[in-house]
Image (cartoon, rainbow over all chains, first blue to last red; front, side, top):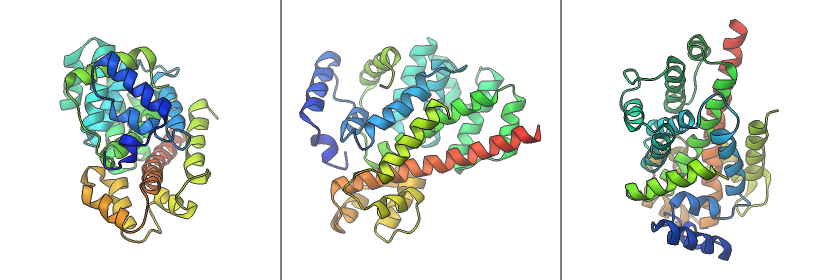
Length: 193
Length: 102
């Protein structure tokens, strides 16, 4: 981490939790936990609620769809840690690795529903260009996506545009596949609370 | 307001207006990505628009200017949340307009 406080500045309780997680997973403490766990009263406790509601709250989108959205936004931001983390969860949620790989490598050719495709297209544009217009939203609505589904997708987009920037700025180290597998298993069961 | 909107507003209010070690004016400026002076200006521009380009040296320069790690932590979070909030606001306005035009 580029700030030493994010490696070493945690409370005793957080350090104990990290040690327990390392014991159970046999993997290093995930960098995201170090970020969220540092002075949670300033940011982490609030961000957890935003993220959990976006990713696991009531929605017509499945958990897999929203994890794919998170991975897709992260790819648009070139955030390796988040791409890998949320691809792993999406693969586990869908039970379909090739679906996730295809979506992230070639959105237009990947096998998926047109509503999901149109939504991902919009999220990608919003992430890359920082804004979208009424025509862009019109295209998503025309693909059969409801306004509530668009709102739900924007909630994922907000969460991951925030976390991607922090992961890159603070230089999250990227562990191996086993660490992301362990994380995916946990996130599918427990979410982001 | 839905739960997610309330939670997003609560996050923004906390990082901008709640207790912190960085000056509120600096946190607000970082959130808006405007009104900062270098080296923070250049650094926050990167955080907001091209975070993959942030380097160890960028952090070192900001630390050398007198900010503490805790202040940098807060300011960076404000910048990240601010950029995401601008994206969200743009998209929400676009959605409202698209719906009204249907």
